Length: 295
Image (cartoon, rainbow, N blue to C red; front, side, top):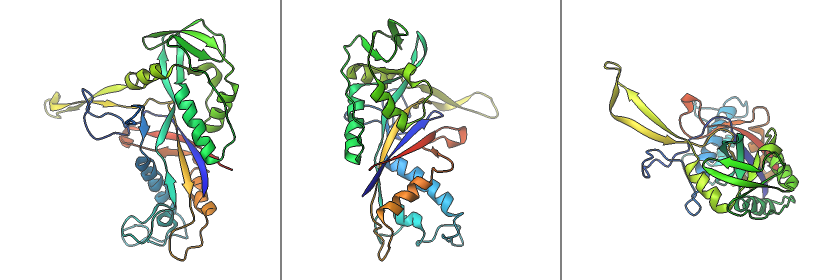
């Protein structure tokens, strides 16, 4: 098995929805059931990758299309992701949910901050160890009224309605690992670590919720019942997903796990972007991808 981490840095707001109403929000985003943290389900990530792979494959001279411009079964896309129809064999990649790592939160004391918590960092370390990465760091758990930062820019920090006493910490190892995952300008100035409970509150209530309406073309007023509220993840959110590649499961195929993983990596070698979730026609869901292979 060959493995890698793919980071997803949102460059536009992202709506990966659950398709059902919860409370006053008509279209909420996907969340983990046990933590209530935002995420993107692995099926959505894998589906977006497959769509991108299909676009590339149709330009590949080694893949043929039928009269309806659909890829034929012997194309590598079906070998990597599994055939869309039929049960000849399973796919050769396992793609996890895209897990949250950094959440942008508005700050009343300056530029927005990229907020995380010890529980998220500990989970990242577990994923790194499972994938064969050697980067390990440790972090304390802040008190309820504390926020860890890497500089001494201010004594007090406001995130949404919360005021924190800032405490300088050596976050160099944390910053180095996150910098490998994604290219973020001035991460040293923007990174903030807060208590797990405080972060859970921010992850629930600091995500944007926007009202949408549909206008009647004749009367130029809102159509009856056409007002709804949609939740999104803001731009500059950092998520990551893990990819595990296996030897091809197609009968008589000679593709190794390395070549299967290379197909995934090649998708982002020239243009490292992936569109995920809904509302593509209004520019939502665009993520910058950075790949990190395991040992």
